[in-house]
Image 1 (cartoon, rainbow, N blue to C red):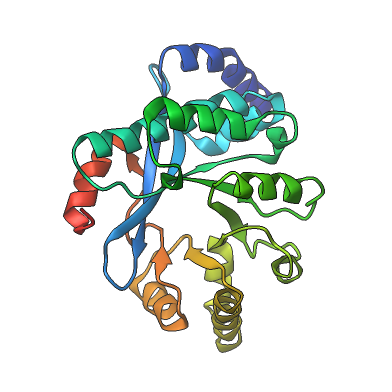
Image 2 (image 1 turned 30 degrees about the vertical axis):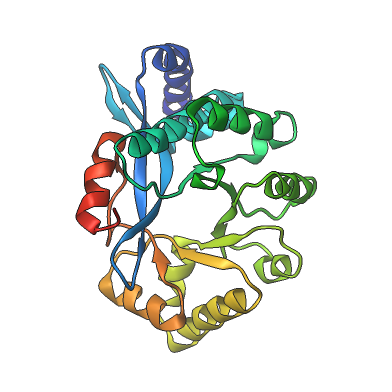
Amino acid sequence: MKSDLQKKQNIEEDMNKALLDNQFLMYLQPKYSISSGKIIGAEALARWRHPEKGMISPADFIPVFEQNGFILKLDCFIWEQACKKIREIMDHGLTPVPISVNILREYIQTFDVISELKRLIDKYGIPQPMLELEITETLDQHGVEDIVKKMKSSGFTMLMDDFGSGYSSLNMLKSTPFDVLKIDRHFLEEFMDSDRGRKIIEHTISMTRDIGLGIVAEGVETCEQAMFLSSCGCDSAQGFYYSRPIPAHEFIDKLKLSGSI
């Protein structure tokens, strides 16, 4: 406990300077079409490169930021970096792919996310569909659903992150305002181990498609997983089998290599 408290204190002492000194970086994890092998999008992720401590794990600093509220400042930084990257791709004369950014429940009801995102889209002159929004599935949906509907009515594509992570997922499908579900990596790992589990994945994908929702599989780490998902009708995937999260400056080259542009 003493070690954990000291680690938290060190993170909180360094976080504001880290933001001012550009120690935070945006990494992008590409999303691929299983059938074509082309990049069809990316998820923006935060990384922290400390000048003395090196790379600090997101597992260490993200929970601290969520507790103390600094996560909003970090997310605003990542949102802007994502818009800048889309603008950079366009300035190279290339066709951009959507980049999704994370929106957290910790501030969703107290901060005007829509206005800030619209401001950034206007600032960088990018097509709004190129910036997608991810919100983690939660058991406590009170208040979240209305805000998601507002975001969607404002023209944003909404992705439910970590679908199947243990909450009442099937009940949510009945009235969900989301456009795309992202299958949780643990759901895929655990259910791939048995014939019954594979059937559950297959029918979950089929049901999701039947009601008109898009689907992306997270945490795809093997060719077997990718081929199974494809056979079930899921063509969008991200995970180490395709690519680890990469520094943003490498993304355009990755796009070109995949034949996406």
